[in-house]
Each structure stands twice: as C-alpha cells, then as structure tokens.
Amino acid sequence: MKLIILILRFVAVIILLQTLYFKFSGAKESIYIFSALGIEPYGRIGSGVIELVAAVLILIPKTTWLGALIGLGVMIGALLSHFFFTRNSCAR
Image (cartoon, rainbow, N blue to C red):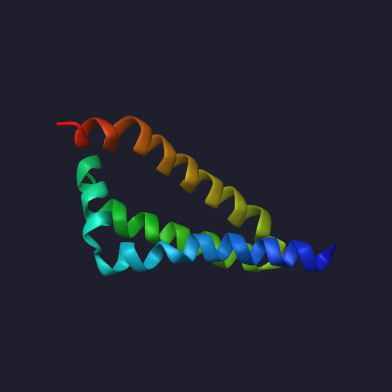
C-alpha cells in the first residue's frame, strides 16, 4: 500500500512539473493563454512557482496534504480560467 501511495505521489509531481518548462521558457502557447487572461508574464511565472512549491510539498511526507491542496487549487484555477476566460477571448 505504501508503494502505491508513493507511486501516486510521484505521478502527481510529474504532472505538475511537466508544465513548468513551458511556463518558465516562455513557450508561445503559454504566453498566449496568460495574455488572454491579461496576466502575462506575472501570472505565468507566478503560477509556475506555485506549481513548483506544490510539487516539492507533495514529495515531503509531512506536507503532502498541503501540496495536494495547493495543486488542487492550481488545477481548479486553470480549469475555470480555460472555461470562462480563454475560450471567450479565443472566439474573437
């Protein structure tokens, strides 16, 4: 059971970390999304830092719950922004 939990923690961390390259390197897709939200570059860099902190916290056993909570908040924010903001500005 402990191995399964460890694997799930690493999967969550990998998912959070894979987007950091695009945010920190200034990939045009990432810039487009955050420009549509009106928070480029600070929102892009800030959300990347928050995701990095969440990933590190998930790896520390005593703070896994906090990292998971922060990660959940980031994902909910991303979903809501895509549903309500970027879709409308892309249609223009």
